[in-house]
Length: 197
Length: 360
Ligand SMILES: Nc1ncnc2c1ncn2[C@@H]1O[C@H](COP(=O)(O)OP(=O)(O)O)[C@@H](O)[C@H]1O
Ligand SMILES: [Mg+2]
Ligand SMILES: [Zn+2]
Image 1 (cartoon, rainbow over the protein chains, first blue to last red):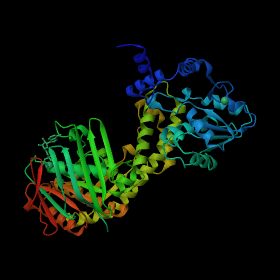
Image 2: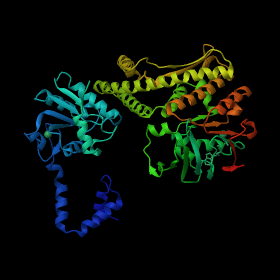
Image 3: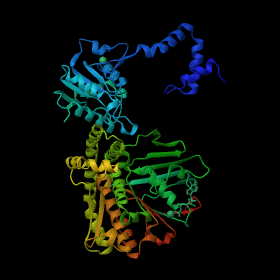
Image 4: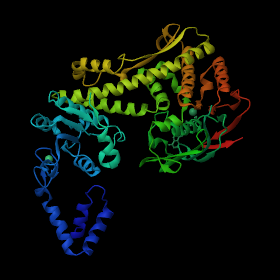
């Protein structure tokens, strides 16, 4: 049985963490609110893809290219923190004390899922480091086999670039995503970073 | 020394057992009954609580009673385990484990706190089988002996699966390969180190047991890593094998190919020992495992002996029961005839019939 309600519910149910029951409840909730809200929601969704840019410097995702972080002259351009995802970048941002720039890989080296070095923004990072005033690169991928392998890939691609390469400290629980790590632990992990051998 | 002591076991829809509660003795529990009545099933359930895996290498669904949807195994552990309650629920949906009523995250600490040793007729493969059977023997002991072994083992498994996938993909991605070699070497070195430590602690116990049981003279056990040495040696072996590995499509050297040898009178027991000597070797290896786990975990492991009396001859039986009497732990022994078990005091007898269990 198709209809506007079912159509929308089905689309919503494709979102992560949303089951059919929740999707239906959301649709009925929207029906009860006034149409200003649903119009705003609809056009936000409709224009999401065209408004969003991938930063050509750091691969962060935002409304602009360069992204607000790369565009912020008060941030320390000598320091780059490499993260696996945008949510990880946000987690470090909201923990508050980091004032350098970022580089987003959009993934980890995962041969078992067919993700290789060319699928990550490692070459972009290498070019960026070699053509700017960067002094230190902090690798903040998670401490799992794939996270460590990715850290090594970065190390190999930066040999001879003349930068300090550091790794966040092991305060972050083994294998867990930065996104789900509390901000004090995250701050400490960055403060206590160690030289990569 | 404290011990792993199961004070109460509650089973629902496990194998051929519909619903059973038992309160075992802190020392000897003799489980008797005819063949096919459910004795081994009972030991399997207890072993599951300590290791989260079946010693029969069964699939999860096979352990749910035919016709039932879900099985539940609940154990309350006393003595040094301080009344901890562990409950496993298994069914088509998967597995759920609760410790003291709360969803449990099972890390190495859990297995370290509940050491158990199973001794059953299938253990003869430790001597007669291939290197994989002997690695499994070491690995199972190490999941309990070393808190970080499980994490090292899983990480190594992930690293080698990733590396093998890279080796199979054309064109070969050298950058990706290099990135995983170091992971393989660092987790591999941890595995080798912990296996060496275990074998070193088992060796004197093994030799002593061999001498006492069989009077076999010169017996030895030794770990034979495919690559001797630590991180650097493994790294250079991996680098040196790239061409061969690429041709084969998998990683040829590393702790996943290691072996353990048992020698009787200077000869490899797998190839040269008699059946009787091989049984002695297995018994001595198990006794060494118990002693070594006692040292590393600080508690006497719970012992599960499945049908061993029928496997061992008179002398070996006498030795085994002499050893058990001196060990302060809790023991479960299955047998077809309860009067075959030469244990006097401290024993509770259970009789199994068609999945139901009676105490006498
Ligand atoms: N999932 C199951 N559902 C019902 N019965 C089972 C299941 N798995 C095994 N059994 C039964 O359990 C019995 C074997 O029990 P087992 O403990 O091995 O016997 P024994 O007393 O000889 O050690 C067999 O009769 C077998 O049919
Ligand atoms: Mg049996
Ligand atoms: Zn940017």
